[in-house]
Image (cartoon, rainbow, N blue to C red; front, side, top):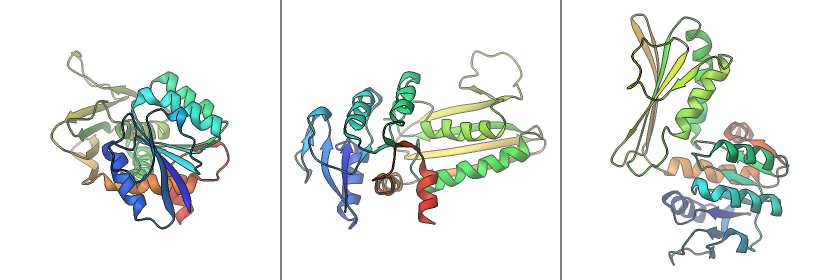
Length: 254
């Protein structure tokens, strides 16, 4: 039985994960971290992560960027593997994540779904063929009106996957309203839409002469991310220090 701590347990994703783990015979939630206890969780909830003294095998994080520094300190101190799902981290925080991964196992992913992680691989293959042929690349992401960061971490991960294949030769453009010039071929446009209750939609367009090739992914429920996070938590338990991603989880299941 894998013992998990849920960081951000009373958020929407935290509650979805709590329900999924409750039905998983291979895992259990032994503690939660959140600013307040909603009184409905079947495990103890700590408002201060440093006060959590419950033994666990891994921690799953779906919280907010300001809480990440304390989270990393806690995981390093306790040698507790961490599945880090929070997006919108600063450059300083990303550097701290890298530093922490030298001391403890960290799985960082902007998106926990199997489909998105497969798409990351497919985009590399597409970019290797279409980018040299002069196709323009644009990414459009859509999320609910409560999401605070833009563009989404997933959109940036998709762009990074393409850019890595192309030797990091592309610049990311987030706003064209102040630009009075033709589109540069060496740029990836990234647009964000916020509205309603959209769980998450991502479109990647390769636009060439007389044709457009579009890769699309739509999430219709938060459960797709929660299931991936739980699988990642079970995978990461007992792993040595290092930086992991969802590809490692997928390969372990094959």
